[in-house]
Structure formats: structure tokens, C-alpha cells
Image (cartoon, rainbow, N blue to C red; front, side, top):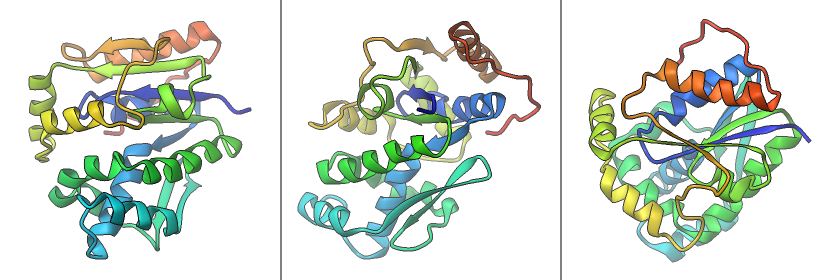
Length: 221
């Protein structure tokens, strides 16, 4: 089986940037599972389905045509047709994605898609339940966190207006696959660390475990 690096954590903890950098240094494929939930949310909104109506979201999830296609070291998403990645960070999607992600039928469909990618390539997969649910048996688990005020400031700098506390509460309290630290995950608090320092900490742990990161000039955000 191809190895999987699981990087979990709440919004604006730095996991997306760190995961991209680690994937580049390992030569693995980067997978952003949060983008999958955003893709479903965007399509729901595009089709006029209220993300707050659980039954409607569940019915849509069971019939949707969803694919994550590996291309160029990352994944391209399709949900009932192509998805514009720039649309996934819109305020409407950001405010509704946690509601969609808590629906069991949605999670079941996307977790199956996420697991299927392992057969295609070694992965660095980031999200909220990768180490605890999607790949609980991977030995390479990390949980990135930061203080709420630090994460709020990061979102503002990125030009986004996520309601961090609201999303945290929904993600941690949902009945299926809540956001939590896997028992054997290495926890890294990024509040006072640079991205380079977090990447170095992750790569150091992976090097010790036998997965060697190589130097790279890629500093994708």
C-alpha cells in the first residue's frame, strides 16, 4: 500500500500550506479534503439546494457524480461536472461548508473517494478526520493547531471571513467524525512558529520514521 501522511487540524492552523510543502519535499500527491466538502457545498448552492436542510444534502450526496482526479501532483475535483477551484473560497461556501460536512451521507461518499486515492499514489492528505477516520492505521499522523485569535488573524490576512469559532464548534460537535486529535498523532502548535519551522518539524518526524524529505524551493501558499 502507498504511504499516507495525515495532517489534521482546525481552520487556519496552517495545515494546507504545510501539507503542500511536505508533499513537494516527499514527491507525494497533495490532497485537500476540505476542498472536497467545499466542492459539494458549491454545487449544492449552484443547484439551489439549502445546505442547512440535512435531508436534501443527504439525498444529493447519495446521487452526486463526484470524482477526485490526480493530475500534476495534486487533485482536480468534479462534482456533477467541473468545479472552479477559485469559487470554493467564496463567502457563501465558507459559511455553509461545515453544515454540509456534518451530514453522514456526504462524509461516507467523500471518505470512500479519499481512501480510493491511496491505490493511485503516495499521499499527503489534510483535513479534519484523516488520522482519526479516513486512514486510522497510518503511522504518519500530525495535528496542527493554533490559538483562535491567531487563526482569526490569519484568515483576515488571507482576505477570507471564516467564522472560526462557529466552524470549530460545528466540526467538534458533529455526530459523525468530529474534529479531534487522533490518539497517536503528533501535535504541533503553530501559533508562534513560521511555516518553515512547522514543515521542518513534520519532516524531522518523517525522516526519523524512514520517509526522507528532500530540499525544495517550493513555497506554495
